[in-house]
Image 1 (tube, helix red, strand yellow):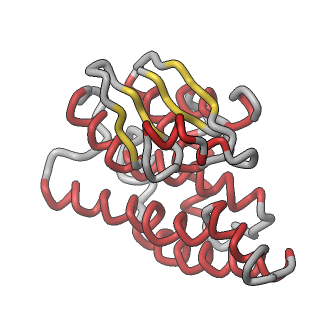
Image 2 (cartoon, helix red, strand yellow; image 1 turned 45 degrees about the vertical axis):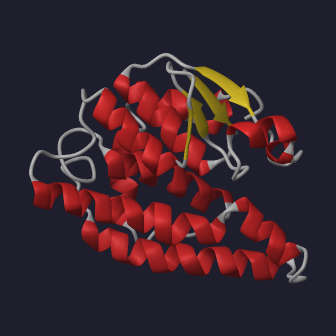
Length: 208
């Protein structure tokens, strides 16, 4: 498999963690967002949305959207599982993961921040206030949804942990105070003990 990646992309970070947890080998190909490589025709032919990540699989097809790719990995490589066995448990996990992937991340995506700085003429203080507002709104609810055992929903890392760790990494980059979220911090600390998460860190990637 070939992962079209960017070290600081939290969506790509999710997939690096997931591939590591599943024990799957992949080749990482950096698509440099700051240099607008994602807008080049060659990449748009692979992923018309021009976003990272994308995953080229053994069939020759290329998949896009990190949450869809995570579902694909879960269906094709079920061990270790990212979701619990029971339907209610799976719904709870998906809800918490979507609180990150759908409610927090899109509002703080790089292209959104660039639009705030550019056409909307916001200074760095304005951009930071925007970033912090949506982190706070998302993390306030998420702190109540998770139940560290020691991971977000059990004794092993799963879908929520995969999404949470990159979002906390980004929160720290933007100097967001996490003191009000002891559960989230405890989960993050537990994940940091695992090689699969450590190897996925942006600083360990080419260009990170």
